[in-house]
Length: 224
Length: 244
Image 1 (spheres, each protein chain N blue to C red):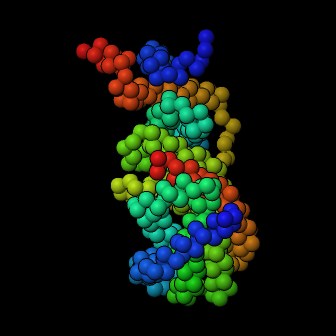
Image 2: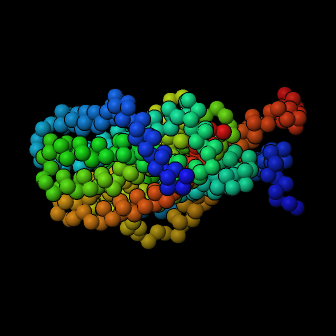
Image 3: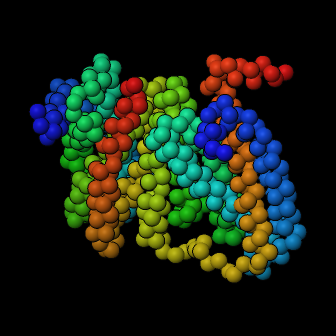
């Protein structure tokens, strides 16, 4: 089996497992929708205000929904011993970590992209801002999955891992949040979104380069 | 004299014990001198009045908060590369002091901000990134506290620490750009009026005192961590029984 084949096998397996357990998978998506829907109830339905806070609210909810689903990234495989066997395989662990993160993005990130425009309409965002919102999430959610995989690997099997992962990873998400929500904000205020999207892209490249490597090391530390 | 000689816990423990009083004494002397200069020698600022004297605590604390995180990352990297137990212990021993200085910097910053800007808190780039730095310290300590196995706690904490230290500059710049885009330049921390020499001296002496304090406290903490981890060894037992 070639390296690429191994990567695809890891991704395919996780996606297949998720499609067989739709209940688990949908929880995070509904969480995303509900958190966003709470904000107008909290701050009031004034359209101008909603348009101002909209991009930020959708982005923060995306961070939280990602964190919620991250707890399961390695936990199920860890519990039944599969993860240990996978780490013992002759393929680099970095590829395993990368494949897991990509699968997490396919399962949890892509649905957010589909739901986000609907939520954006609720927040009175104009069409061009909706488009940039989806684009910023398309670049940004892989970052969330990649960085999050580090946190998931570090907290593997710990008591209170769910809350702990939030403490570890949320500060690291700050640049993604700023650039992502900033891009949409740029469209709304007329300053443009290219700069934010480019920076978000750069952050994605860096996460892609470093995260799988670090989370592979973290997995080894946690499983040993 | 081989420096690596002191990398072993059994030789580090007595050395640290001998060094702690010196660093503690230096910290005390320097802090006394620094506080004397800052309260009695340094002149009143013609713009900010007496309130500016907060910077004698605030600036050294802010410096230390950043230095300590980088030093922790240094020890983490060495620990991961050469698998030296003492490096992990040093990183771990420094964390609470770093978090304390970050908190002090934020707190004194709020006290300074109220009379100068009329607000306890503004979402200025420096304040915001300092707050996130505080979160990074909290995350590191929470992770350490959640893992019972010291071997795993050391490595996991070090990895998190290194990821954090790569992220700190990115966070700083992202917050800076975010800030300038959002609210323009309503408040600027950087307009430093040329400072009187004596003020600068007071600040530097206070910073030095903070360094000495940090070293002393980190060594005390490292010593107890060493003793806790080496409790099954003969030398540690001898140490423990030797004490009343």
